[in-house]
Image: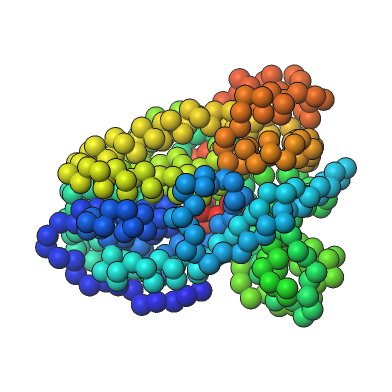
Length: 425
């Protein structure tokens, strides 16, 4: 991980045009887009951690991001596989041709701090309150701003329902070349065990060959509860490496818990975190894929939309920017209703140990349908095709799931230290 000293100098008395609170994926990309597309905008990113992006790995299919938007991430040093990726299930194994990309947060931090002027980034600086006129820091410093964008992490809400994606990944340095040339996006031939050691869940292993002798192995679960026994997951990652014949040492690790949203009252959930006159972006604003938890295509699109709006209308008020982001969030919620319905089928209609059948059924479909699904751009024929054929869940359970409110995504059972909306699996 790149470690740079915090930028914590006192801000100028003159108000900033934009203060971005949270330097994760969404906040960092907004800063980059403003720097490139609204060069007259005086902005600053306020990040509590010592690095931008935290400690994560973001991955995406190349087709997730439209060609016209890819320039925003083209400058990052990424791992890429143009020959496609593999999936494996008990009764199905395939290689799909879509190119795949992965970005480590260390590279995200390095590229942003190389390109952004130092005065545009405040690291090791915690914001304790936000309003339409600026931000108050933990040391009492007030930063005045004409506009504030809240890019802090996702906040669980009883107004949203669904399940959880739980994961722990380890970066191995192998003693010998591992032999992989493509990522394994899902190896679901493993036992369908819960992430806390008891019960069942949909479980798969995700593998990225980062170099000829380095490999990232992640144990991932679609589980009913946000519970993780890290020791259990570390053991399972080690078992998988042993099964593949890979010996070596662990040089890095990450873990997290992501919400998988299946329904709820989006307006009520947004009202819980909204601050009058403050724009909401990132996962906190609801910009993620409801079933996969992928965020990067939406973060790229929002960053460019915000930057181009401010370049076109440099006098836009904070309230107008907040309304602009809110309207985009509502459109995103409506556009992703189909995926929330599939999430209900997964969590409310399929028994935990048989959820693997749902994904096996999906991955047997045409590769370009799978591409559009991950990008959140499924066509109506795609949607019908996914639901046709022998149903992977019992019809009575599926019908009940359609009308189910689901399990609230509240914070009571959640270890918030592991809550992380930035890392897709």
